[in-house]
Length: 473
Image 1 (cartoon, helix red, strand yellow):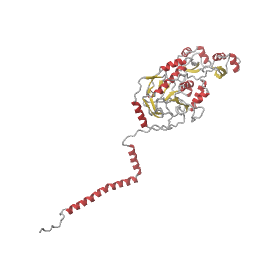
Image 2: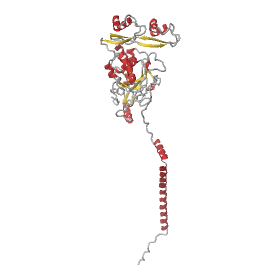
Image 3: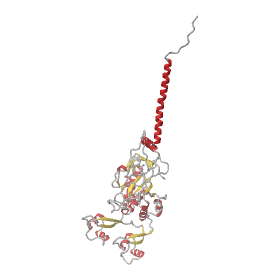
Image 4: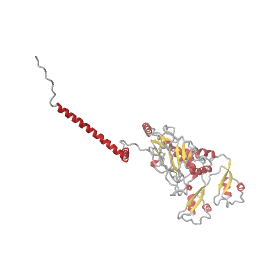
């Protein structure tokens, strides 16, 4: 008979193992609780010192794990005088001041601009240059030639006689004397005369020359292609027989009239302009890019580039710029400097001090100066050749590809007067100029933007093949 099993007895070491396990459990709980208490204590300390906490948070924000692209903000400029004009009334030579920033409507995000740029660069372009043959052959001189008599006001110059005026305007002397109640050929004391004439010639250009040491009446007459006696007659009573250094010699010169055959020569000149294809503007002028930008070529016969590194634009813009200056030079015979300021950088985008000029469609052009203003360190509004300025702007307008021209409202009045003297009608100027409407009036192509005093700003329209280019209107 089997013996019954004795009851199971726990090993003698088991109670000790249980005690050790309980000890480790308690110790682990204490270790977990210690960091939590430390964190709570740290939180209480930071709550008691909010300044330090904010500084730490600010530092944390300043050091992100991945750098983000810089945010481009518009520049706010406040001044007591128009930008570009000093307190003494002298014009500064800095271009680009006061460019407007077009913020109306949707703005194309940077990521989308980059995607469009990559897509366009992936497509091949024709390496052959394109010729400017599709530009309209328009003579920029706006004078009406309708053979209808019109009343004009002639400004009398020193030494001028009634006989000279009758000959200049192809009218009878008796009519000149009758219209102005003259008793003889002398015009002493008269500053202006009223004349009723057909297709009057362009007003004469007044030139002021500052004599240098050693210059004589004969050398000046030869330099400016005028008669010596005529030059002396213009300055009689002001200057003596011998010219002294720094004396101002004044004379007048006839402006060459537009030739009936001017279009033939102009067509030949335009056909010589070649611009590389493929320069595309994308986005807005104030938030855009330039793809395969075209550099404005060196053409000292047409213009001077002020900053070559900022002389890049779309193919369409460079084409319109060169064509307009070619028209201006050919039709007016203007032989002084035409200075081109900022256009865009090679890939477009923002560059100071400009707010626009980002997509290769904006061009800054210094207003042409008179002969007396050329070479001056500081020029005033009076040194601007307003007739030449109007003719240059008009050469852009007749091309039909100008979106805007920016010029301060106070100066548009001078431009209006020069345009009327050149023969532009009131109906034409109502379409082109904002003046005499208020600066904020949505009228005209030539608009007020503060800061455009010594230069004007031309914005060219998007070309037909620029599908991603955005205009304000």
